[in-house]
Image (cartoon, rainbow, N blue to C red):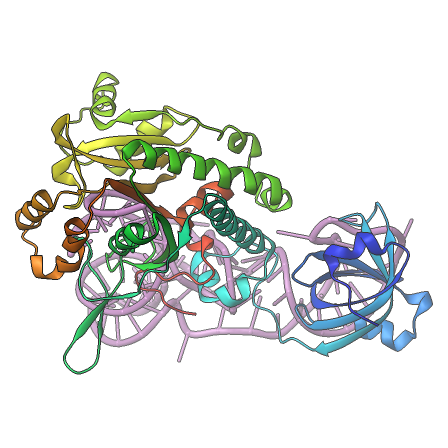
Length: 431
RNA sequence: UCCCCGGUAGCUCAAUUGGCAGAGUAGGUGACUGUUAAUCACUUGGUUGUUGGUUCAAGUCCAACCCGGGGAGCCA
Protein backbone atom coordinates (compact mmCIF):
# COMPACT_ATOMS: atom_id res chain seq x y z
CA UNK A 1 0.00 0.00 0.00
CA UNK A 2 1.44 3.35 -1.01
CA UNK A 3 2.18 6.08 1.45
CA UNK A 4 -0.11 9.09 1.78
CA UNK A 5 1.16 12.61 2.42
CA UNK A 6 -0.43 14.49 5.31
CA UNK A 7 -1.29 17.38 2.98
CA UNK A 8 -3.39 15.00 0.83
CA UNK A 9 -5.33 13.43 3.73
CA UNK A 10 -8.47 15.52 3.24
CA UNK A 11 -8.88 13.90 -0.19
CA UNK A 12 -8.62 10.46 1.42
CA UNK A 13 -11.59 10.81 3.79
CA UNK A 14 -12.88 7.38 4.78
CA UNK A 15 -9.99 5.51 3.15
CA UNK A 16 -7.33 3.30 4.68
CA UNK A 17 -3.97 5.08 4.60
CA UNK A 18 -0.32 4.56 5.49
CA UNK A 19 1.63 7.56 6.80
CA UNK A 20 5.34 7.90 7.41
CA UNK A 21 6.87 10.70 9.42
CA UNK A 22 8.13 11.77 12.81
CA UNK A 23 6.37 11.87 16.17
CA UNK A 24 5.82 15.59 16.76
CA UNK A 25 3.84 15.41 20.00
CA UNK A 26 1.64 13.09 22.07
CA UNK A 27 -1.25 13.53 24.46
CA UNK A 28 -2.27 10.44 26.39
CA UNK A 29 -5.03 9.36 28.77
CA UNK A 30 -6.03 5.93 30.07
CA UNK A 31 -7.98 4.96 26.98
CA UNK A 32 -6.34 6.96 24.19
CA UNK A 33 -3.10 8.17 22.73
CA UNK A 34 -3.26 11.20 20.47
CA UNK A 35 -0.17 11.16 18.30
CA UNK A 36 0.80 14.17 16.20
CA UNK A 37 2.60 12.98 13.09
CA UNK A 38 4.78 15.38 11.14
CA UNK A 39 5.86 14.36 7.64
CA UNK A 40 7.17 17.57 6.07
CA UNK A 41 3.94 18.24 4.20
CA UNK A 42 1.95 18.87 7.35
CA UNK A 43 1.01 17.65 10.81
CA UNK A 44 -1.93 15.34 11.53
CA UNK A 45 -3.48 14.01 14.71
CA UNK A 46 -3.74 10.23 14.92
CA UNK A 47 -5.82 8.52 17.58
CA UNK A 48 -4.95 5.15 19.09
CA UNK A 49 -7.56 3.55 21.36
CA UNK A 50 -6.78 1.01 24.05
CA UNK A 51 -9.90 -1.02 23.32
CA UNK A 52 -8.85 -1.75 19.75
CA UNK A 53 -5.27 -2.66 20.38
CA UNK A 54 -3.15 -5.30 22.01
CA UNK A 55 -2.47 -4.11 25.60
CA UNK A 56 1.31 -4.28 25.32
CA UNK A 57 1.39 -2.49 21.96
CA UNK A 58 -0.79 0.28 23.37
CA UNK A 59 1.57 0.85 26.31
CA UNK A 60 4.61 0.86 24.01
CA UNK A 61 3.07 3.61 21.86
CA UNK A 62 2.85 5.75 24.99
CA UNK A 63 6.62 5.54 25.34
CA UNK A 64 7.83 6.35 21.83
CA UNK A 65 10.25 9.28 22.20
CA UNK A 66 9.49 12.51 20.35
CA UNK A 67 10.93 12.85 16.83
CA UNK A 68 11.21 9.09 16.40
CA UNK A 69 10.46 8.13 12.81
CA UNK A 70 7.26 6.08 12.64
CA UNK A 71 4.83 4.48 10.24
CA UNK A 72 1.11 4.63 10.97
CA UNK A 73 -1.62 2.50 9.38
CA UNK A 74 -5.21 3.60 9.82
CA UNK A 75 -8.30 5.20 8.41
CA UNK A 76 -8.59 8.90 7.54
CA UNK A 77 -11.67 10.61 9.01
CA UNK A 78 -12.91 14.15 8.80
CA UNK A 79 -13.28 15.23 12.44
CA UNK A 80 -13.84 18.71 13.82
CA UNK A 81 -12.23 17.84 17.14
CA UNK A 82 -8.90 17.30 15.41
CA UNK A 83 -6.62 20.26 14.55
CA UNK A 84 -6.72 20.57 10.79
CA UNK A 85 -10.12 18.88 10.53
CA UNK A 86 -8.75 15.42 9.69
CA UNK A 87 -7.79 12.61 11.98
CA UNK A 88 -6.31 9.20 11.37
CA UNK A 89 -7.81 6.37 13.37
CA UNK A 90 -4.69 4.28 13.77
CA UNK A 91 -4.72 0.51 13.86
CA UNK A 92 -0.97 -0.04 13.74
CA UNK A 93 1.99 2.12 14.77
CA UNK A 94 5.50 0.96 13.89
CA UNK A 95 8.71 2.59 14.99
CA UNK A 96 11.19 2.94 12.12
CA UNK A 97 13.93 4.50 14.25
CA UNK A 98 13.63 5.38 17.91
CA UNK A 99 14.94 8.86 18.68
CA UNK A 100 17.22 9.81 21.54
CA UNK A 101 15.95 12.49 23.91
CA UNK A 102 15.14 15.42 21.62
CA UNK A 103 16.80 18.67 22.68
CA UNK A 104 14.22 21.10 21.30
CA UNK A 105 11.04 21.20 23.36
CA UNK A 106 7.74 23.04 22.99
CA UNK A 107 8.86 25.86 25.26
CA UNK A 108 10.84 28.89 24.16
CA UNK A 109 14.57 28.64 23.60
CA UNK A 110 17.34 31.21 23.36
CA UNK A 111 18.96 32.17 20.04
CA UNK A 112 22.34 30.65 20.86
CA UNK A 113 20.85 27.23 21.58
CA UNK A 114 18.56 27.33 18.55
CA UNK A 115 21.32 28.40 16.18
CA UNK A 116 23.62 25.67 17.47
CA UNK A 117 20.77 23.25 16.78
CA UNK A 118 19.74 24.78 13.45
CA UNK A 119 19.75 21.32 11.82
CA UNK A 120 16.95 20.31 14.23
CA UNK A 121 15.35 23.74 14.66
CA UNK A 122 14.47 23.60 10.95
CA UNK A 123 11.86 20.94 11.83
CA UNK A 124 9.75 23.27 13.97
CA UNK A 125 6.52 24.85 12.76
CA UNK A 126 7.67 28.43 12.57
CA UNK A 127 10.87 27.59 10.71
CA UNK A 128 9.00 25.42 8.25
CA UNK A 129 6.63 28.34 7.58
CA UNK A 130 9.50 30.77 6.96
CA UNK A 131 11.17 28.35 4.52
CA UNK A 132 7.88 27.94 2.67
CA UNK A 133 7.74 31.70 2.25
CA UNK A 134 11.36 31.81 1.09
CA UNK A 135 10.56 29.10 -1.44
CA UNK A 136 7.58 31.10 -2.71
CA UNK A 137 9.62 34.32 -2.97
CA UNK A 138 12.29 32.59 -5.06
CA UNK A 139 9.68 30.95 -7.28
CA UNK A 140 7.80 34.21 -7.76
CA UNK A 141 10.99 35.95 -8.86
CA UNK A 142 11.90 33.25 -11.36
CA UNK A 143 8.34 32.97 -12.70
CA UNK A 144 8.09 36.72 -13.18
CA UNK A 145 11.48 36.95 -14.87
CA UNK A 146 10.52 34.10 -17.19
CA UNK A 147 7.19 35.73 -18.05
CA UNK A 148 8.91 39.03 -18.82
CA UNK A 149 11.46 37.37 -21.07
CA UNK A 150 14.52 37.91 -18.88
CA UNK A 151 17.35 35.44 -19.41
CA UNK A 152 18.82 33.77 -16.32
CA UNK A 153 22.60 34.17 -16.47
CA UNK A 154 24.49 32.79 -13.48
CA UNK A 155 27.29 35.01 -12.23
CA UNK A 156 30.61 33.55 -11.03
CA UNK A 157 31.26 33.03 -7.31
CA UNK A 158 35.06 33.32 -7.58
CA UNK A 159 36.13 36.74 -8.77
CA UNK A 160 39.61 38.10 -9.50
CA UNK A 161 39.12 41.33 -7.57
CA UNK A 162 36.62 43.49 -5.78
CA UNK A 163 33.66 44.45 -7.93
CA UNK A 164 33.19 47.90 -6.46
CA UNK A 165 36.41 48.39 -4.58
CA UNK A 166 34.46 49.10 -1.41
CA UNK A 167 33.36 46.18 0.75
CA UNK A 168 35.68 43.77 2.47
CA UNK A 169 35.78 40.48 0.59
CA UNK A 170 36.52 36.90 1.58
CA UNK A 171 39.89 35.93 0.15
CA UNK A 172 40.64 32.36 -0.87
CA UNK A 173 43.74 30.63 -2.25
CA UNK A 174 43.47 30.03 -5.96
CA UNK A 175 46.29 27.70 -7.00
CA UNK A 176 49.98 28.57 -6.77
CA UNK A 177 50.34 32.13 -5.50
CA UNK A 178 47.08 33.49 -6.82
CA UNK A 179 44.25 34.85 -4.73
CA UNK A 180 40.57 34.85 -5.57
CA UNK A 181 37.65 36.52 -3.81
CA UNK A 182 34.12 35.37 -3.15
CA UNK A 183 31.71 37.54 -5.10
CA UNK A 184 30.02 40.46 -3.40
CA UNK A 185 27.80 41.16 -6.42
CA UNK A 186 27.10 39.72 -9.84
CA UNK A 187 26.25 43.13 -11.23
CA UNK A 188 29.30 43.81 -13.38
CA UNK A 189 28.89 40.42 -15.01
CA UNK A 190 25.18 41.08 -15.50
CA UNK A 191 26.09 44.26 -17.36
CA UNK A 192 28.14 42.17 -19.77
CA UNK A 193 25.28 39.68 -20.06
CA UNK A 194 22.74 42.46 -20.71
CA UNK A 195 24.80 43.51 -23.75
CA UNK A 196 24.48 39.93 -25.00
CA UNK A 197 20.89 39.08 -24.06
CA UNK A 198 19.12 42.38 -23.43
CA UNK A 199 17.27 41.63 -20.21
CA UNK A 200 19.01 39.31 -17.76
CA UNK A 201 19.15 38.36 -14.09
CA UNK A 202 21.11 36.26 -11.68
CA UNK A 203 19.97 34.77 -8.39
CA UNK A 204 22.54 33.27 -6.10
CA UNK A 205 24.73 33.55 -3.02
CA UNK A 206 26.78 36.63 -2.25
CA UNK A 207 29.50 37.13 0.36
CA UNK A 208 30.48 40.09 2.49
CA UNK A 209 33.34 39.97 4.96
CA UNK A 210 32.16 43.08 6.80
CA UNK A 211 32.06 42.53 10.54
CA UNK A 212 28.41 43.47 10.69
CA UNK A 213 26.54 42.34 13.78
CA UNK A 214 22.93 43.30 13.34
CA UNK A 215 19.57 41.66 12.69
CA UNK A 216 19.82 42.66 9.02
CA UNK A 217 23.21 41.14 8.17
CA UNK A 218 24.59 37.80 7.10
CA UNK A 219 28.07 37.10 5.73
CA UNK A 220 26.52 34.83 3.10
CA UNK A 221 23.19 35.86 1.64
CA UNK A 222 21.19 35.45 -1.56
CA UNK A 223 20.71 38.25 -3.98
CA UNK A 224 18.50 38.67 -7.02
CA UNK A 225 20.10 40.99 -9.60
CA UNK A 226 18.25 41.91 -12.79
CA UNK A 227 19.97 44.10 -15.41
CA UNK A 228 18.37 45.71 -18.47
CA UNK A 229 19.91 47.14 -21.65
CA UNK A 230 18.32 50.31 -23.05
CA UNK A 231 16.95 51.26 -19.64
CA UNK A 232 17.07 54.33 -17.42
CA UNK A 233 16.48 54.95 -13.73
CA UNK A 234 12.71 55.04 -14.19
CA UNK A 235 12.74 51.62 -15.84
CA UNK A 236 14.78 50.29 -12.93
CA UNK A 237 12.31 51.71 -10.41
CA UNK A 238 9.36 50.35 -12.37
CA UNK A 239 10.86 46.87 -12.37
CA UNK A 240 11.66 47.01 -8.64
CA UNK A 241 8.11 48.11 -7.91
CA UNK A 242 6.38 45.49 -10.04
CA UNK A 243 8.64 42.74 -8.73
CA UNK A 244 7.92 43.55 -5.08
CA UNK A 245 4.18 43.65 -5.80
CA UNK A 246 4.35 40.34 -7.60
CA UNK A 247 6.30 38.67 -4.78
CA UNK A 248 3.93 39.99 -2.12
CA UNK A 249 0.83 38.90 -4.02
CA UNK A 250 2.21 35.41 -4.52
CA UNK A 251 3.12 35.04 -0.85
CA UNK A 252 -0.32 36.22 0.26
CA UNK A 253 -2.00 33.81 -2.17
CA UNK A 254 0.14 30.72 -1.69
CA UNK A 255 1.38 30.96 1.89
CA UNK A 256 -1.83 31.59 3.82
CA UNK A 257 -1.24 28.90 6.43
CA UNK A 258 2.41 29.86 6.86
CA UNK A 259 1.53 33.51 7.46
CA UNK A 260 -1.01 32.30 10.02
CA UNK A 261 1.59 30.20 11.83
CA UNK A 262 3.83 33.26 11.92
CA UNK A 263 0.91 35.44 13.08
CA UNK A 264 1.73 37.88 10.29
CA UNK A 265 -0.79 40.71 9.82
CA UNK A 266 -1.83 40.04 6.23
CA UNK A 267 -3.82 43.28 5.98
CA UNK A 268 -0.54 45.17 6.11
CA UNK A 269 0.83 43.10 3.22
CA UNK A 270 -2.34 43.60 1.18
CA UNK A 271 -1.52 47.31 0.98
CA UNK A 272 1.58 46.49 -1.07
CA UNK A 273 0.03 47.05 -4.48
CA UNK A 274 1.93 50.01 -5.92
CA UNK A 275 2.63 52.56 -7.08
CA UNK A 276 5.21 53.15 -4.35
CA UNK A 277 6.15 56.66 -3.31
CA UNK A 278 9.28 57.93 -5.09
CA UNK A 279 11.24 60.44 -3.12
CA UNK A 280 14.45 62.08 -4.20
CA UNK A 281 17.26 62.13 -1.66
CA UNK A 282 16.97 65.93 -1.56
CA UNK A 283 13.22 65.76 -0.89
CA UNK A 284 13.83 63.20 1.85
CA UNK A 285 16.48 65.38 3.48
CA UNK A 286 14.17 68.39 3.29
CA UNK A 287 11.34 66.52 4.98
CA UNK A 288 13.66 65.07 7.63
CA UNK A 289 14.76 68.57 8.54
CA UNK A 290 11.20 69.92 8.40
CA UNK A 291 10.19 67.29 10.95
CA UNK A 292 13.02 68.23 13.26
CA UNK A 293 15.55 65.50 12.43
CA UNK A 294 18.64 67.55 11.63
CA UNK A 295 20.35 66.12 8.57
CA UNK A 296 22.93 67.77 6.34
CA UNK A 297 22.69 67.29 2.58
CA UNK A 298 25.57 65.19 1.29
CA UNK A 299 25.87 62.40 3.83
CA UNK A 300 24.54 58.89 3.41
CA UNK A 301 21.26 58.09 5.15
CA UNK A 302 21.84 56.10 8.34
CA UNK A 303 19.70 53.29 9.71
CA UNK A 304 17.75 55.76 11.87
CA UNK A 305 17.08 58.14 8.98
CA UNK A 306 15.87 55.27 6.83
CA UNK A 307 13.55 54.12 9.61
CA UNK A 308 12.03 57.60 9.83
CA UNK A 309 11.58 57.86 6.07
CA UNK A 310 9.91 54.46 5.77
CA UNK A 311 7.62 55.27 8.70
CA UNK A 312 5.98 57.94 6.52
CA UNK A 313 4.44 55.24 4.31
CA UNK A 314 2.57 51.91 4.43
CA UNK A 315 4.33 50.59 1.34
CA UNK A 316 7.98 50.32 0.37
CA UNK A 317 9.44 53.73 -0.51
CA UNK A 318 11.97 54.42 -3.25
CA UNK A 319 14.62 57.00 -2.47
CA UNK A 320 16.53 58.07 -5.57
CA UNK A 321 19.24 60.46 -6.76
CA UNK A 322 21.75 60.28 -3.91
CA UNK A 323 24.82 62.53 -3.72
CA UNK A 324 27.28 60.94 -6.10
CA UNK A 325 30.06 60.97 -3.48
CA UNK A 326 28.35 58.30 -1.39
CA UNK A 327 27.67 55.97 -4.31
CA UNK A 328 29.77 53.51 -6.30
CA UNK A 329 32.00 54.57 -9.21
CA UNK A 330 29.86 52.88 -11.87
CA UNK A 331 26.71 54.81 -11.07
CA UNK A 332 25.68 57.34 -13.70
CA UNK A 333 25.38 60.98 -12.72
CA UNK A 334 22.14 62.80 -13.33
CA UNK A 335 22.65 64.87 -16.52
CA UNK A 336 20.30 67.47 -14.99
CA UNK A 337 22.21 67.73 -11.72
CA UNK A 338 25.79 66.48 -11.65
CA UNK A 339 25.87 66.48 -7.85
CA UNK A 340 23.62 63.43 -7.70
CA UNK A 341 23.84 59.88 -9.03
CA UNK A 342 21.01 58.00 -10.72
CA UNK A 343 20.73 55.42 -7.95
CA UNK A 344 17.75 54.15 -5.99
CA UNK A 345 17.32 52.39 -2.66
CA UNK A 346 14.04 50.71 -1.78
CA UNK A 347 13.17 50.75 1.90
CA UNK A 348 10.71 48.18 3.20
CA UNK A 349 7.94 49.32 5.56
CA UNK A 350 7.68 48.50 9.28
CA UNK A 351 11.33 49.34 9.87
CA UNK A 352 12.78 46.48 7.84
CA UNK A 353 15.13 48.87 6.04
CA UNK A 354 16.84 48.60 2.69
CA UNK A 355 15.86 45.56 0.64
CA UNK A 356 16.89 46.82 -2.81
CA UNK A 357 19.75 48.97 -4.08
CA UNK A 358 20.35 49.79 -7.73
CA UNK A 359 20.32 52.37 -10.46
CA UNK A 360 21.43 53.40 -13.90
CA UNK A 361 25.05 52.61 -14.84
CA UNK A 362 27.59 54.95 -16.35
CA UNK A 363 27.73 54.18 -20.07
CA UNK A 364 30.38 56.65 -21.26
CA UNK A 365 33.90 55.25 -21.54
CA UNK A 366 35.61 58.56 -20.76
CA UNK A 367 33.45 59.32 -17.73
CA UNK A 368 33.85 55.81 -16.37
CA UNK A 369 37.64 55.92 -16.80
CA UNK A 370 37.74 59.23 -14.97
CA UNK A 371 35.60 57.80 -12.16
CA UNK A 372 37.90 54.80 -11.78
CA UNK A 373 40.86 57.16 -11.35
CA UNK A 374 38.94 59.31 -8.85
CA UNK A 375 38.23 56.22 -6.77
CA UNK A 376 41.90 55.21 -7.07
CA UNK A 377 41.03 51.89 -8.67
CA UNK A 378 43.28 50.11 -11.18
CA UNK A 379 41.85 50.40 -14.74
CA UNK A 380 43.63 47.11 -15.56
CA UNK A 381 41.24 45.29 -13.22
CA UNK A 382 38.29 46.72 -15.11
CA UNK A 383 39.59 46.29 -18.66
CA UNK A 384 36.81 43.89 -19.64
CA UNK A 385 34.20 46.05 -17.95
CA UNK A 386 35.41 49.09 -19.88
CA UNK A 387 35.18 47.06 -23.09
CA UNK A 388 31.40 47.05 -22.62
CA UNK A 389 31.57 50.83 -23.23
CA UNK A 390 33.85 50.39 -26.25
CA UNK A 391 31.65 48.01 -28.20
CA UNK A 392 28.17 49.43 -28.52
CA UNK A 393 27.54 51.06 -25.15
CA UNK A 394 23.89 51.70 -24.27
CA UNK A 395 22.03 53.21 -21.33
CA UNK A 396 21.40 50.36 -18.90
CA UNK A 397 20.63 49.64 -15.29
CA UNK A 398 19.40 47.19 -12.70
CA UNK A 399 19.28 46.44 -9.01
CA UNK A 400 20.11 43.94 -6.31
CA UNK A 401 17.36 42.56 -4.06
CA UNK A 402 18.32 40.92 -0.76
CA UNK A 403 16.35 37.68 -0.61
CA UNK A 404 16.62 37.15 3.16
CA UNK A 405 15.68 40.74 3.95
CA UNK A 406 12.66 40.46 1.68
CA UNK A 407 11.59 37.16 3.28
CA UNK A 408 12.20 38.65 6.72
CA UNK A 409 9.89 41.55 5.99
CA UNK A 410 7.11 39.48 4.36
CA UNK A 411 7.22 36.83 7.09
CA UNK A 412 7.40 39.46 9.83
CA UNK A 413 10.54 37.89 11.36
CA UNK A 414 12.86 39.69 13.76
CA UNK A 415 16.18 38.57 12.31
CA UNK A 416 17.42 37.57 8.83
CA UNK A 417 19.23 34.56 10.31
CA UNK A 418 15.88 32.74 10.40
CA UNK A 419 15.25 33.46 6.73
CA UNK A 420 18.03 31.30 5.33
CA UNK A 421 18.26 27.57 6.08
CA UNK A 422 21.80 27.58 7.48
CA UNK A 423 22.85 31.15 8.35
CA UNK A 424 26.46 32.26 8.12
CA UNK A 425 27.24 35.14 10.42
CA UNK A 426 30.09 36.83 12.16
CA UNK A 427 31.37 34.24 14.70
CA UNK A 428 28.92 31.56 13.63
CA UNK A 429 29.41 29.06 10.83
CA UNK A 430 28.04 25.91 12.56
CA UNK A 431 26.17 23.74 11.64
C1' U B 1 36.66 48.22 14.94
C1' C B 2 33.52 50.74 18.76
C1' C B 3 29.34 50.89 22.54
C1' C B 4 25.73 48.10 25.64
C1' C B 5 23.84 43.32 27.77
C1' G B 6 24.36 38.29 29.14
C1' G B 7 26.71 33.09 30.57
C1' U B 8 23.32 29.04 37.11
C1' A B 9 20.04 21.51 35.82
C1' G B 10 19.26 18.89 28.73
C1' C B 11 16.21 23.67 27.91
C1' U B 12 13.85 28.64 29.88
C1' C B 13 14.93 31.32 34.05
C1' A B 14 15.02 32.75 39.74
C1' A B 15 18.37 33.16 44.01
C1' U B 16 17.34 39.60 49.27
C1' U B 17 22.80 43.73 52.45
C1' G B 18 28.10 38.14 50.36
C1' G B 19 25.19 33.33 54.58
C1' C B 20 22.36 25.60 53.17
C1' A B 21 21.67 26.21 44.73
C1' G B 22 15.59 26.83 43.47
C1' A B 23 11.23 26.67 40.05
C1' G B 24 9.01 25.54 35.39
C1' U B 25 9.83 22.37 31.43
C1' A B 26 12.06 18.00 29.25
C1' G B 27 13.42 12.75 31.14
C1' G B 28 11.55 8.61 34.72
C1' U B 29 7.26 6.27 37.69
C1' G B 30 2.08 6.24 38.46
C1' A B 31 -3.13 8.24 37.83
C1' C B 32 -6.68 10.03 34.34
C1' U B 33 -14.02 10.87 31.14
C1' G B 34 -11.68 12.90 22.97
C1' U B 35 -6.74 15.18 24.18
C1' U B 36 -5.47 20.49 21.83
C1' A B 37 1.87 23.35 24.61
C1' A B 38 -3.66 17.96 27.81
C1' U B 39 -4.01 17.65 33.14
C1' C B 40 -2.67 15.71 38.26
C1' A B 41 0.82 13.27 41.95
C1' C B 42 5.70 11.61 42.94
C1' U B 43 10.81 11.63 41.16
C1' U B 44 16.16 11.69 38.74
C1' G B 45 19.07 15.76 37.45
C1' G B 46 24.48 21.07 39.51
C1' U B 47 32.66 21.62 38.96
C1' U B 48 27.03 28.53 38.78
C1' G B 49 31.70 30.02 31.19
C1' U B 50 37.39 29.75 32.55
C1' U B 51 41.51 31.26 35.60
C1' G B 52 43.18 34.00 39.55
C1' G B 53 42.11 37.43 43.76
C1' U B 54 39.41 39.65 48.34
C1' U B 55 36.71 37.16 52.56
C1' C B 56 35.38 33.06 58.30
C1' A B 57 32.13 32.49 53.91
C1' A B 58 31.54 34.14 46.65
C1' G B 59 26.29 32.34 41.85
C1' U B 60 26.73 37.28 44.22
C1' C B 61 32.51 41.61 45.05
C1' C B 62 37.43 42.62 42.00
C1' A B 63 40.78 41.47 37.60
C1' A B 64 41.94 39.06 33.13
C1' C B 65 40.35 35.87 29.45
C1' C B 66 36.67 32.77 26.55
C1' C B 67 31.82 32.34 24.37
C1' G B 68 27.17 34.43 22.90
C1' G B 69 23.37 38.33 22.09
C1' G B 70 21.83 43.49 20.69
C1' G B 71 23.24 48.01 18.31
C1' A B 72 26.66 51.55 15.39
C1' G B 73 29.50 51.92 10.96
C1' C B 74 29.08 49.30 6.06
C1' C B 75 25.76 47.31 3.02
C1' A B 76 21.14 43.54 0.30
